Image (tube, rainbow, N blue to C red):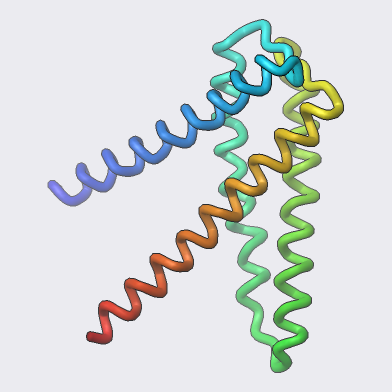
Length: 141
């Protein structure tokens, strides 16, 4: 029971960190007039919806697990999966922008937001892979 509670607390802390970070990103971008925010509650909900993107992101990432014989084929498949995830995320953010009328992105603001969140996502993925590799090395010792 204690492990379940501890895991739940860690998940909520990580969720709060991401929610705060994405909302802070919206705040910083609104200072440069890239985004106009009329309701901060809507900005927090918008950030939460962006976090919910991780569910289909992981489902689309399952295509990366397909086994191919050639290393070139694996690299091409990985690139296609990442490009597809990025394209679907772009359409998702544009759809969210249309749904949230109290948040208005400029064209440059939309592009900057998508690129920044994409870079953050790639950074988290690379960091997770490094942690997984270190964990694998520690278990073999």
